[in-house]
Length: 369
Image 1 (tube, helix red, strand yellow):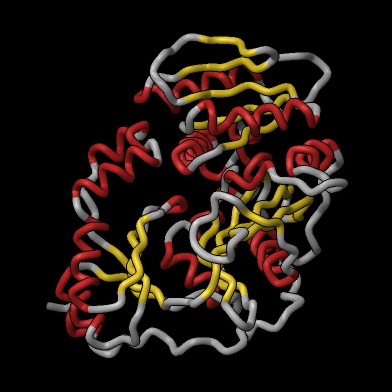
Image 2 (image 1 turned 30 degrees about the vertical axis):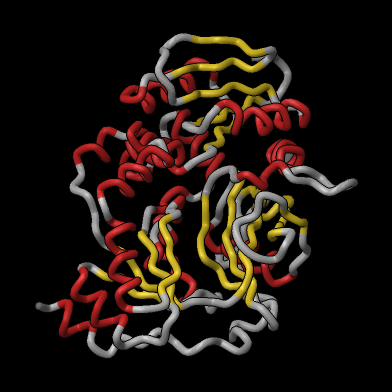
């Protein structure tokens, strides 16, 4: 890697086409860039100034460690859930009893922030508990362990609801349910072997041997339906401070966006900043929201501790996330307050016009059967 520049290692299991724009933006910002790519190979290629290290599927974590050992990067950035999980596992192994004696562990902690804090928002249930504790607006939800429980709940709660399979940070299995029979059919689609295999392939989770040894999970959750449009925010941050951010929503105002428009939504910005501060995060972090029709109230749906597709977006005259990352980590780190506690939210914690909560009158009896 070129001398005299900040060295940044990108870890990915996404396609080269998907990650190349991010790599180029890092180069343009002034980083010396290397990439560990979770594909079959095991040799080193060079694409212009980017050193590309290809890893065999079951040697992905080993390759990350070897490259970090050899290159001594200043920062490491994941672009997907699988890569993030590998970095967490490496950190856990290299920081025994909470001591970061290993240079690799120190680099991961510098790059991601408080690694253990991500457990607070890892699943849908964890995120809801965290949000409720801090007064953040999230849709009500409840986990469903089997089809019998699901049927009783669908007979008891206001419809429509969202049925979601909790696939971790990148979980994309979700269907809108308007009736009981439709809900049962959606349950089988979301938890069926075909869908689970598809999810593994989409998330490149076959790079994690432990996933191959785990029994297939059929747990899903019912989530309160919010009538609105999806929105996303991505931020660059260091030690709990947001350095820069970008927010988008679909151009046509509905549905998954292939074309998005940049939006400036104060409440979204404040929620993201509060989460980053409270969890003491670093790196690039993504946030999923739904913006309620009428009120424009943002509801937090998920947190992704890695680079997302909108991380490259920038408006004219504004700093890109790679630019902010380079400048933010070049400066001396700022210390948190004496008490280490995040400041209170600068907006009202009570969501406006909150829909009726998801009622669960029969859940304890059904779950006990």
